[in-house]
Length: 500
Ligand SMILES: [Zn+2]
Ligand SMILES: [Zn+2]
Ligand SMILES: [Zn+2]
Image (cartoon, rainbow, N blue to C red; front, side, top):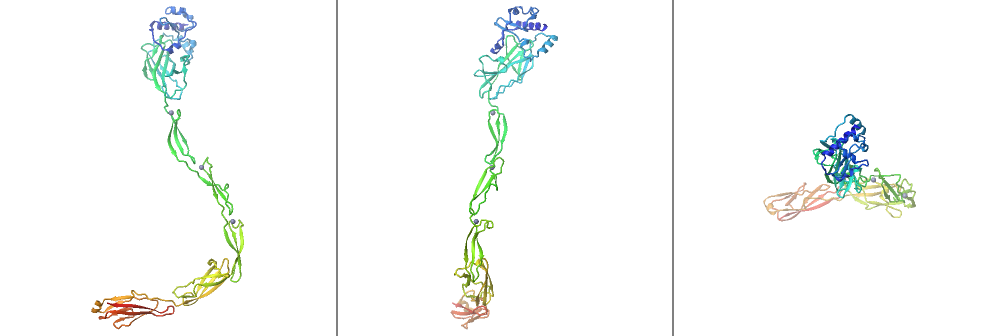
């Protein structure tokens, strides 16, 4: 009862001091005329508090000049934020008169216009005896979104998300509490900045209709993602905006390529006559790519398998077989005859002595006159260096067996005499003055002797020629002889000495 009286008194004061104030349309929406309203109240304002004690209303104002009625929120309409019980309890104890609010601070207003998101309403009154009535946004096309359903008009078109590039305007409305009221000197702080609001006539509501306006856009909030490279696709580290999906590549890594490994179970081995395949499987995780390499048929690996070797008198046979995998293939051609080897045919019967061992040129022919492949025999020679009879010994193997021999002759070798020059010229002018000596420098396999026909020109045992002083012009001959020996034939060479 006491409380009601108090409130009514406060409203009366407001009415008395209230000038005509402008108010927004939004305010109009909130103005409610109660069914229980009667003129009686307005007439009795100021004096009849006691008479009104039983009335249901906590406050009632009539601004007759504006033809508008204001009714402050009743206890029944309170949504609980103010704490009904508390208020009831406390006001009984600490009843006070309505007071002018000196200042109100509203913080935590969220002005971000992140496209694609719903408006966030988080404003809080942090100072001053007032509460948030509503927050809201409107776009240029008249679409609106408000925190409180009471703020919408019937024909409002609502939007749910900020659209990119649309321009939005923020609205805020606060209401004084506990019958306190705002005045022209009340200071309003929003997020720390001072703003002027529009008061309603009763000065219980202050509305800020154009304190912030901006364009909705994506403020990009990126999260980092990583896609690992696979065998065939590159890997990528990138960030993507959680709102608009904009992507920025941070790093790429090349594809790894397949890592093929031979799968023996899936592979098929090629044989002599059938193709096979090698199957390679990529061993990288989550791939399993398969690569096949065809292996052509190997063909038979033919060998000559000797059943019976031939000798110098008997025929033999051999068979052509495939020996792949130790003959597992089983392929075999018919058997062939090996004809007996018959004789050794020497290229020459006689070979001159050389001072070194002599292996004669020869071939072995078989009974049908064909040459036997030398791979089927080995050769050893005896007495094949010095003059005399040498012997060739053959030992057969492979398609043949047995031994065979053949003799050949080593005869005396031909030797040659070498000299520095076969023709030596001595100037006549020199011979006129003195005797001239020249060395022939002859060499051979055996001992050398020298002869000169002229008495004017002599040659000694060492092959030094002496041309006597005063020898006449002309050509003189010296004969060099290499002596015959056990191994070498005799050899001669003529040297010309020219005096001119
Ligand atoms: Zn974005
Ligand atoms: Zn792979
Ligand atoms: Zn084979």
